[in-house]
Image (cartoon, rainbow, N blue to C red):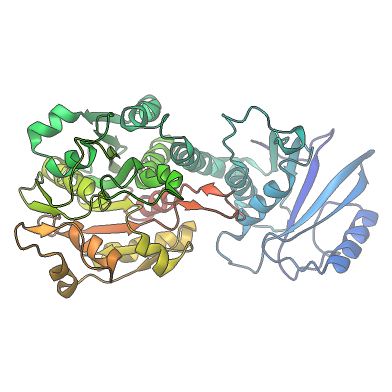
Length: 487
């Protein structure tokens, strides 16, 4: 990805964005009259009007070369993420086209930052994970190797931020996509250690340290696995110590979830490698913040376990004692993510006294039933924090929808023989899961829980994401910190 102040020479596909309703003949496309006329006729013939991501293309003689020229719509003025989506739509279309170089020329938009945003969208849509594919047909292999964006020095300066947010998205997607024999608690930690080179401080607790701390809820989930659990804490302080209390980002990291003794059905179980999507988002957000040297104090925590059936595995009706001292009757071993988060939430509050906490988890199937794959659920004990998150979601594209908390729901978790049970009835399953987590929030610390079960992984491609891991939460958390917590 490079910037240039003029179109380069040689072979490339030229991509020209244009707003919805703009007059192609009058727009500053940087094309000769004959090419503009050909483009007008192509647009009329395909009913192209500039809607976001819609495209029309021709092959034209440009500077002595026959060149693919693509006109891509950026939608109506002010449409959220429209420019990024335009870049992503083109990347999705041309990725395996045989083109090796794309040149984005946004002069017709006359909008600051357009070049960087087009490239940012193209990289998001162009991300792939072909590491294990050894027999991919040539026509299905990606061919685009280079993107050039036409823009001045200020545009290139804008890219410095997008570049690192994209790196965080890519890390999160990689962690989620890797198979569970490659990503398990210890290897997850090692995959993240590259961030130490960016100034991120690492603290890692193993099984023995967590036993000493009394983290029975988290340890109970992992006791049936041959891989030992880990608690990963990544701290970034870009304030030079001026912000004493950090913002805590907490992620559920169940690297594979069979359901344990409460075994999941076989069909679809392979998807449960993405049950660490919350931890992946936290890792990706920390990569973004450290990479762009955010002037904020943030600690990212990942509770990493594997939930397996075994002779040593946790049983339905076991009672575990959490680090907080509260006891939990485990009625369903497949409601394991909340047990992991409970101890991580206690640990970060006792050790770092955060000013606010946001946890992310692929927590409940009920959330997919409620919101599908368009929004993640947001639960919070603090209206101000909830508002910050909703706004960050709107700006970033990682959309949230707030759902309620309340005492009537809380009562559904009461146990006859322990402080609480880990599941309520079928009704309001996502809400009772959030109510469970709220019981581990101390001293009225502002806290929000994001249930990303429906957004961490998608089965159909979009303008910014191929099917599979989405990296949902990285853009959101980066925007949350940038808008509300940077010095």
